Amino acid sequence: NNTFALLNKQDQTFLRMGFFSNPLYPISPHHLKGVPLKFSLIVFPLSVFFNFVANIVYMPFGLIYNNIQIKKALKEFYASYKDQDTNLILIDMLEKKAGPKNQYASYKTGIAYLEGIHVPYDLEKAESYFKIAKEEHEGGLVKLAETLIRSENPNYDKAFTILNLVKDNPLASYYLAYLYFYGYGVTPSLRIATIYAGTAHTHNIKDYYDIYPKILQI
Image (cartoon, rainbow, N blue to C red):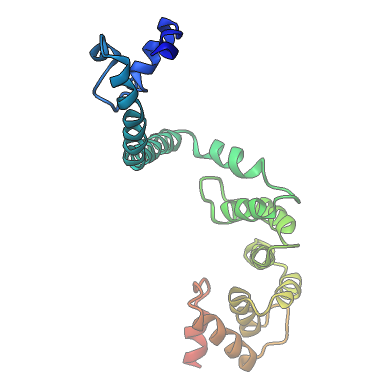
């Protein structure tokens, strides 16, 4: 008793509160007004324990709620972002990141220009980005060869050379089949074209030039 008598009123109030200020606990300091200190000593550790348990129980629900709110915010953000000019999105998110230090971004930017996705179809720009991506990204070499094949003045010799560097790539196999079948940049060979076309067909490669069915018809 003498020990508690030495405490100032603020300390005694805190002791009586016993962390009851936690919103999870239904009792407030107002309810404890006039409660003897001895009773507070008993209730104090119980209140600490209750708050500890209550927070453990509450925490998962709080995390779930926060996760829902985050997903909702992201959904709203992307919804508003889609309403903006898609060309600006491409420039901001891809072209500004494209370069030797980010070959994947260069590859994706090249794809966009090659396929005309959200930007004007531009083989020259596509080729420039694929040249950047070719060092570490195998797909960049294949797409670079594709730009050479699809251009108004195809460079089949260069495309053939590039494709041979990654001839194990299924898509590269398909374009090699195309070159061998028509004799573009290489001596025509139905046998070799069939082998490459078969590899591409096995991997369900998109049939840009409808080569495989033509080979089967011969």
